[in-house]
Length: 385
Image 1 (cartoon, rainbow, N blue to C red):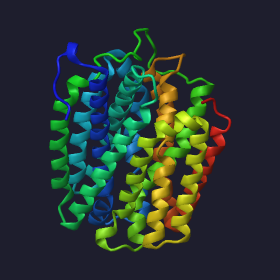
Image 2: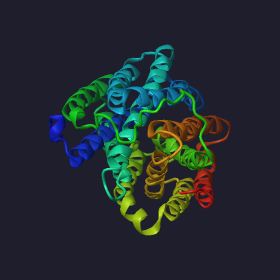
Image 3: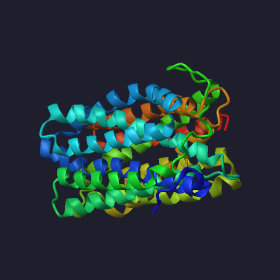
Image 4: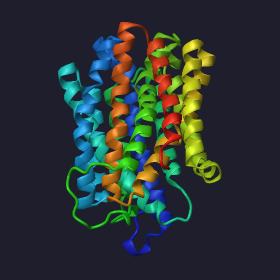
């Protein structure tokens, strides 16, 4: 547990633990929403195509927030921006659970998307600053905490589904946990990240070629991640036809191997190099998705989703770590630039799956997403890492 500390008593290890805690809080919020998507879809009577269109509400909030968040982090610091993001993000989650209709759910999703990037970019800026205090890579371990939270949130969601707990009460519990966690760990965050310089920078900054390459890798990888986050439960329900208690099992399997892979990614990267790790990750993602498509029964689908978890585990941490070391702009602005490109994939992936599935089938849409894994490996072979 992270305890409150005076600024003079905070050590690099305390900073690391505090930032890890905030990655966990961020992941818990998102996983809680993702684990209840099938329930909300059923309650509102949405088809796959309807759900795909509904999920477009999140990009409406996320995309405008990306450059704005980079500027806020630069102007006011990542710690204060993270706090604001956490409060809005967790409050919007409760709104998603209580929304009785599409007319109220859509604006809640817009706010949810906006706040997610406030928290995401500010906490990743904190992580870049803490990593600079250490002589070895540690970025993947932070993202491992996000994935561990995803596993935890999925497990809680599975239990809530099993006991037929309504999403609104489930999300109120998560809000309480976020408030407690934020209070206990806030003082351990970096007051001003070493990666946050004081030079004036404009609100909108065009990324250079290196950042564009990193963004392209993130774009392809996050299409795959977005598919797993938003559609794994639906895939197990509609295609695998799993029992009610197993509907969230695919998401849980994916998140568990993603967390495990991220905790080992720093060690693997130090020995193989970032390029080789990203190429291997892309191939594992493609193979895992194809297994789930070709053998849509419980055992093979679980295995496939586990491989996708391993495959997607290290790509985003490595890309963000490289972006945070940019020499042409501050870490917050560089992360915002790469995130703007990468999160386009995260945001358009789920709606595309819904639209393709509505016209054909979920299996065909998942097979198309598998190609993105191969694109990760291809782009990484030419990118500057």
